[in-house]
Image 1 (tube, rainbow, N blue to C red):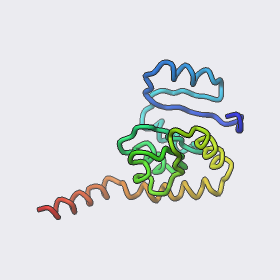
Image 2: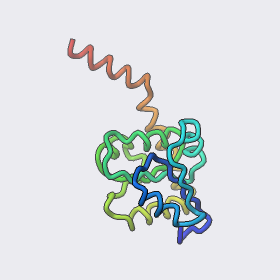
Image 3: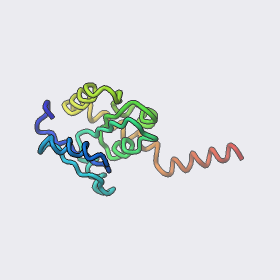
Length: 147
């Protein structure tokens, strides 16, 4: 926010740590802490975001990154757990313990329209691999191979 004062940071989650919420709110008008939002609101936020930042330290699958990519958002995410496999080169990945690298990646993607567009297109294409139909067909093939 210091590099881009007109930028708005919107935080959605069911964060239960009151200290996290207090710190986020204390950053001023540039921060919007929405808490839990319904699917329609989340989709609208993804579609209107300049970049979606998914800095998870512990993640099972990486569904938020995949959902954001499916909505056409450019994603900057942590390079841990299943996130690299799920995003498949369609997101900028940064080590979760390197906050300066996250800031630099976010700033770079925010300032570079062409790069942001490139990652958005890659993300939409990558997300198509994870449709319900594709998942069902893969499961069917797997089950047929062991039968």
